[in-house]
Length: 102
Image 1 (cartoon, rainbow, N blue to C red):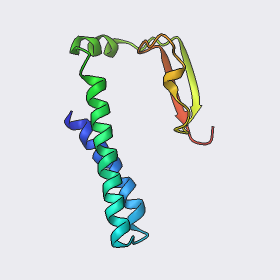
Image 2 (image 1 turned 30 degrees about the vertical axis):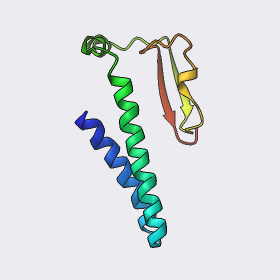
Image 3 (image 1 turned 135 degrees about the vertical axis):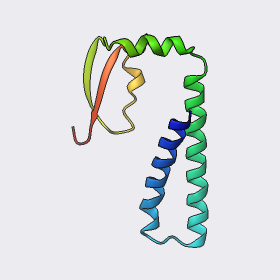
């Protein structure tokens, strides 16, 4: 879980850095701090829900080979919900590469 927290913190730092250049006011900074803390908490909770119900053996099976049914190249737009492409919910079913400006 330490690696996931590091990645989450890195993303939050990058997100926060985009606002630092604009020199937000004290009120804006407090608001941004709250937004960032909320986003980090949501990501950590979502990761815990994803990782918790599956035993370690589940992930070992997926490490051995990639055998997706189909590859897809999609736009990196966050509004495109990739979990809707596989109705059976199987992991390792679709290989998805997201590209900016696709």
